Amino acid sequence: MDLRGKTALVTGSGVRLGRAIAKALAEEGCNLALHYNSSAVEAESLREEIKGFGGRYELFQADLDDPKQIDSLIREAQKQFSYLDILVNNAGIYPKGSGLETDPGMLMQVFKVNLFSQFLLIKAFARQLPEAASGKVVNISDSKVFKRGTDHFAYRLTKSAVNEMTLQFALELAPLITVNAVAPGIIMPLAGREDMDMQPVAERRVPLKRIGSPEMIAQNVIHLLKQDFITGQIIRVDGGENI
Ligand SMILES: NC(=O)c1ccc[n+]([C@@H]2O[C@H](COP(=O)([O-])OP(=O)(O)OC[C@H]3O[C@@H](n4cnc5c(N)ncnc54)[C@H](OP(=O)(O)O)[C@@H]3O)[C@@H](O)[C@H]2O)c1
Image (cartoon, rainbow, N blue to C red; front, side, top):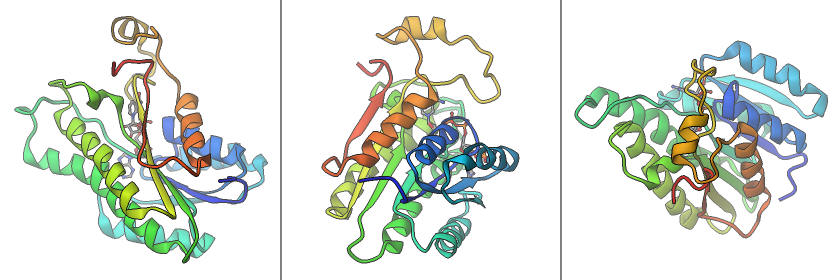
């Protein structure tokens, strides 16, 4: 797919990985539906930062734990752009806790934001595409789920389900829509702890002995979006950590 002139919705585009993905798409010549939840200021500053690329960039606020807001996000995006060619499901939450520490309310909340929102957005995306138009979906997963661990129980469950959902939708939505995922490894410290030195962690856990960057994730998203013969793939961008 030639990305120039295509319209992409990026969820959680105001900060960190989502912001890098949105910037890379703007550089490729896409119009952007820039979704944010609480990061209104950051989303506005992103629009300001990319305006020189010459596309059309609109901001959309929605809390993705609410299916009604997901519906209206897609409806509002359609009003502005007529339809979307690309969906990047990036937004997510990363709460701590083992299985015993996870209460049902928390589990449900993580499922809503990390899995159900991607599921609802993919369905709405598929339905809004004009007949015979092709579309592309990239879900952001996590390479952490390829190895078991007792931390982040709810998060691990949701990202494992995102991987499986990617394959199931890839089958179901072919041949017009491709559905792939990027599974990042250690890319950034936790939100709010950006000054943390991740190098010692990388030395221990990552064969390539370094952490990644948001731009590396963005470039892999772009790669998948440009390919017309790849669907149902999960690219692990993790310096070999999953091995
Ligand atoms: N950072 C890493 O090293 C890493 C590693 C592996 C996988 N990942 C995955 O990569 C993606 C981005 O990670 P990140 O570190 O950039 O995340 P982050 O800094 O925690 O940001 C989360 C993003 O999700 C949005 N979001 C959270 N809850 C939401 C809700 N209820 N409704 C709508 N939007 C919501 C936030 O929007 P607002 O800020 O506007 O509220 C924000 O843009 C996530 O899916 C994460 O699981 C990240």
